[in-house]
Amino acid sequence: EKGGWSSFMAKEIDEDPIAVENTLRGRIVDGRVELSELAALDETYFREIDRVVIIACGTASYAGMVGSYALEAWARFPVTVELAHEFRYRNPVLNERTLIISISQSGETMDTLMAVRYARERGAKTVSICNTQGATIPRESDAVLYTHAGPEVAVASTKAFLAQITALYLFGLHAGRIRETLDESYERELVAEFQTVPDKIRTVLESRPRIHELANWMADTRSVLFLGRHVGYPIALEGALKLKEIAYIHAEGFAAGELKHGPIALIDHGQPVFVVVPSPRHDDSLHPKVVSNIQEIRARGARVLAICEQGDAAVLPFADEVIAFPPTDHFFEPLLAVVPLQSFALELSTAKGLDVDQPRNLAKSVTVE
Ligand code: F6R
Image 1 (cartoon, rainbow, N blue to C red):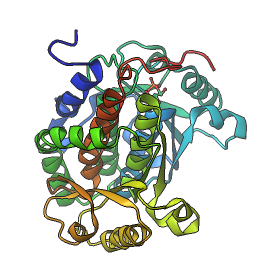
Image 2 (cartoon, rainbow, N blue to C red):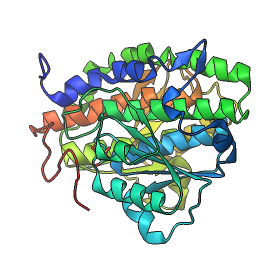
Image 3 (cartoon, rainbow, N blue to C red):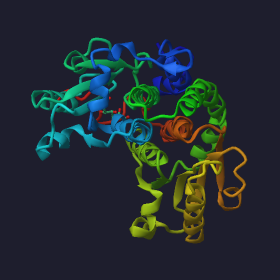
Image 4 (tube, rainbow, N blue to C red):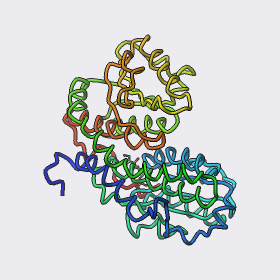
């Protein structure tokens, strides 16, 4: 039931915070992550894993990309993310030390299921991240980490995406502890910060009226670009996918560093560009690089819509619009930054008078290859 909401998608975006909260619930014990559902993979195995391959499609693959940065940083696995439908056809190198993590909201996506089967037959272990109890993919995996986003009805995935990132991060923290690759005090800091994320998402949701206005002004827009870097890169891809799916607008996401290797040629007067800006507090020098990208596109006439940390003074002079999120650890920024992009797609679809929940040509669960 969609209750008082205008669409299931609107309701499900409002459930972003609770999806994260419920996926964390019961999995943090004394300030550290414990995933009893992974007991089938013992500690020796965790130490022996020499490669992780995340397989998924669409939005779930972008959750996989976000998670890949954390798994690599925290558990020091080499991680790649593969689209499930490409994976099987490249004759991938797999063995018993390869861990496959599949991600699927429905647990029934045929491409993902076939990739899991393929990997298992070749000796890899499989963990599935799934939102649907008892679905086919979790039944065919060695272990399951359920996301607890609740049923997702709108065709465009929203709250499940946040829950998938949450589950991957839990996996990364769990693996980092076992593999002793994560400093304990940093681990505890991350876990404590993680628990504040749902409330920070609630703060970000307050930007909804502003996004409504923005989308109304932009109802005639024919193309929107999205830029991001590091964990913000998959968020740019996800922002673009949402807009294609439900607003039927040409949209593309790019890694900000890739701009000068081609896409900057697309920038023309008035071209709207969403930029996901990392916090200036991180000591990784990404912030000034993204700010200089903003300056480059602004100088070429782009209309810059910045999603940045509250009070980010370096962005203000160059942005036509600023949507701010509260300060958090770098890894948690995607869980905040994606929310306005989901709302933007919803509002633009609504402004165009389209069916938000049932976009043309799409099905909620793709059970054919
Ligand atoms: C995007 C969307 C799709 C799904 C993809 C995978 O909004 O809904 O891209 O994410 O089809 O579906 P699941 O997660 O059910 O395997």
